[in-house]
Image (cartoon, rainbow, N blue to C red; front, side):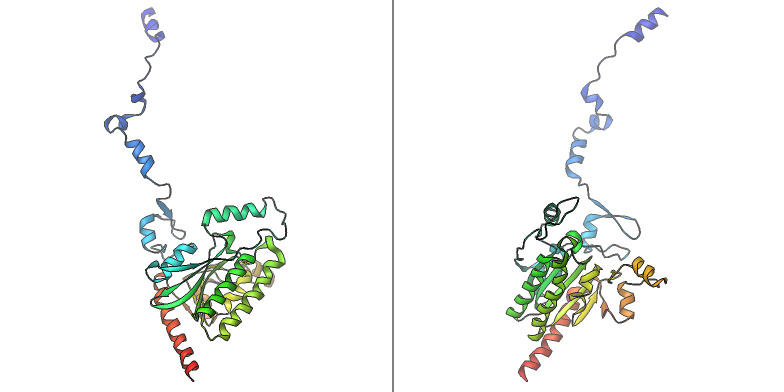
Length: 306
């Protein structure tokens, strides 16, 4: 018994550092390090509808449309790449405005929110402009990025829209916009609401020049954006199942004290009720836009000749 106690009291031999790494490292040295270095954290993406985990390269090849048909939100660069021929286009510089004109009080300073959004998206604000060809048809394209503070409409976005409209008139090409917004930007107060009127006046110049203005509504398009330039197009297209409206469903139901029908404020519902002309899948949008722009520009040429 004493001998047993003596053996148990004997200090354990320190483990070899190599042994502590486990059996896998012993039969395949370096495997663990390779896995950490080569495997990205975002290799798999969850389908918002089915919950299925999707392989990211496959999702990218499908233009971020899931097998269940969900059209996931995409940023400005991807949208421009998907829209223009061979992802080739000219980026139009967006105007620079004052970052915090009202010195808006908040739990996090507004300039810091802008800085974080710019770092995350690589864009100056919620709108970006590109000029190029869509299946051979020249066009000026605006894209709203919902990732940038909910695609909110503020002074910078308003100035960008006006700039795009002016460039379209200058180059005598159609204007196309992909909308995605939660509405006006609260940190800019009345100044953001003024952009609804400014963008409408800019559109008047486009229409006075006889140039087409086509709107593609993506998920979500709501608030003051819907109440202004998102509903002033010559043609309104929408991606499948996109949320489109002014106020949210819950607010409307509480206001009118009625239960809204299924699918209310979705693209397909709005086509049936005449608010949207057609629902178009993302992969088909360039061809559809090209056909529309070609037809509308032919009409303009006939009017000019007459």
